[in-house]
Image (cartoon, rainbow, N blue to C red):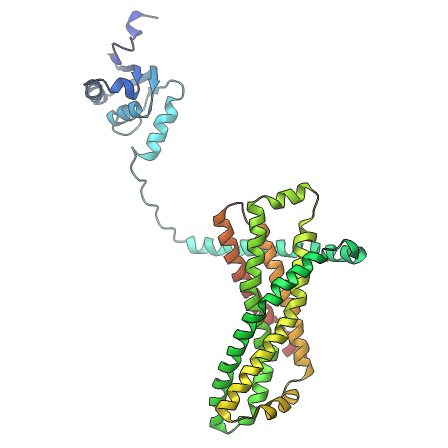
Length: 376
């Protein structure tokens, strides 16, 4: 190699040879920290960069971010057309080019079709969740049949615990809310019925609306917000603490030990909570009707069996069973999809509650259409 191309690193950090600028030596923060060295190199590089030169960095012995930034600024914060790189040097300068010298990237232009893409993504996400729920329902049926074949191996202890948590511990809140809803509904109905002198229809109005519609939906919304969120959070914490992975390693099925007990428990407790909510709402409506319309409690209770048919009670119980199973399936589904981090746990729990309440209202609308078509 000719002597003119051999550049001593400590003496000549750069050299011009024709239309080629050779950069060599130590371009680290230690070398640039020497008195006046950084300014001298920066001035020389700026003078060289003002000419149409080719650059050769293959003889640079050491290059860190500070040295690369000094060369990058001399280039005018853009890569020259012709550069001979050393090992790994181009990656450093490419990173500087992407960051534009440490400046913030320009703001992205608004996408006029972004709303349409968001809608499409939401539709596909809903379809994926629906498919996963359908698969979970099929596996639940298989697990339930397996439990019936071998009842001794069933998760009876977990079912009992879930019945207590989702049923017995929810009696207080459902009674309070049901009672207040009955009072409000009775007061509003009484004001309208007094205008037409139809006070005696207060029993029929309260009975049908509460037993058939408000009782099941109200109990389902309370259970979705209370028990559904608890189920999702409990399974999500098991994901965060890797208990779900440990269960798979030990050969324990998630469906048999986590999903099946909760679905069975809510299928049992929801109809009972519906009856309990109906009773509290009717009690509140009866007291409000007595104070607003002067209707005696004895006449109210005697007229109640005639106002509410047995079919309405069965419809309320049917809604309770299906609402409970739906809430449990949705809660378990989103609990199993939680990622092992706290942010996913919060978002999953919120999504579970919102989806459960929406699903309950949609299912209630389907029931209303079906019962209307068959004349019930």
